[in-house]
Length: 319
Image: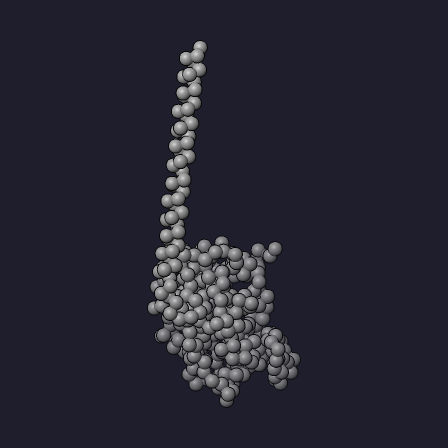
């Protein structure tokens, strides 16, 4: 059982319902590297990624692209919807101003979340020395700061300390459509209500989404990102046709559709046609068999009727 209020609170009726950005930002802060973030995000055990943009009823692999300009970082979450189409899902922006104040926000792509869907850490009163209250990882970092009304969440996050450290190395994912890391399993998507219930606990340290007054802190960085933003025609067409509204009806036990997601090894796309042919052949054979088996039954009923008529005729003749 789960609370319907919780499960419906942030439902958009858009494909973004299958990826909770509150949970994504929470996971991002707890990660030690970008590669680690990408791996855990796609790990079925975390249950955060439930995205299905190509509607094959299986979870899509989300890769993380990194862009940097001076002290501004842009981490773009992307899905290769087809061999030729890539869709940006969301962008995490980390910026440091001239006073070394760091801000962090995640902005949902308008195709998946609508316009102005922004999530960021909450603000609250803090003592003079505090660990990151929104960070619950294995190695919390204690930061000494003067008492303030703003939580120093971002500065103490391991991922932030890493990208601004001398040991930082940019990460470029080698994956593409049909080629995924061995740890990734394209499991069946989970029903929206169950998915939101399972991830709602991530919302505690953050605020935003639609209906809030959260604004983008670094407009210049966001505008630069938009100049190279990726949008998929497949996603646009599915959205316009209302195809993503059916996501709420899927369960973890749902069977895959006729469109199979490519396996983890590149070059397996060639197997799709043969699989389709086999399936269609089986269906055709089964149909023909059913029709053939039905004909003898009809003949038997016809024969039985004739025999009965003969018996009645003989009976009248006897009288």
